[in-house]
Length: 197
Image 1 (spheres, rainbow, N blue to C red):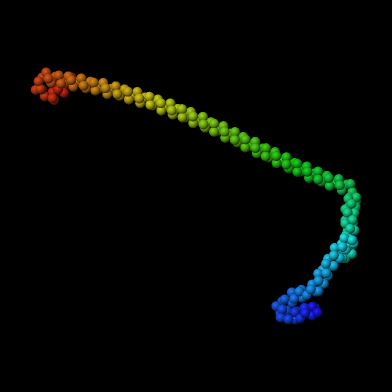
Image 2: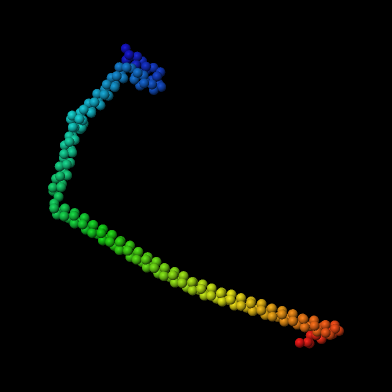
């Protein structure tokens, strides 16, 4: 009876809106049968793969694996000793070439380091020579400056002594002139005094 009701739902207005499957799923017997069918099919597939190691096409999986292993072993047995020796010889020659290349690279790197060291040593020697030359120039300039300072100080002292002696001489002349004026009594013309020693 429920099946008939489900079919009525499929033909009703729900079908136009895409709810027909939903209405069919609501029928208890149909949903139970569908779930039971799914469980049986998955269970059969699972157990058949465990108990019978064949897939659907009937090819034995274990036989494939064994055949592959046997093929690998037979390939190893059929390979001749000369082929193995050739392979080893080619590997050894490749390794020798690699070692030669690495030695060449190491030698090139050492030569580059040696060139850099020589260039650095030359630059250091040039820098030291320049520093020594600048130090000598600085010392000579300092010596010349000290000598010039001493000369200017000596000249300044001499000039001060000359100025003091001239001032004292001028002062003595002014005293003598004042005494002469007093002795002459002021009637003497100043222009005549210029001729006095």
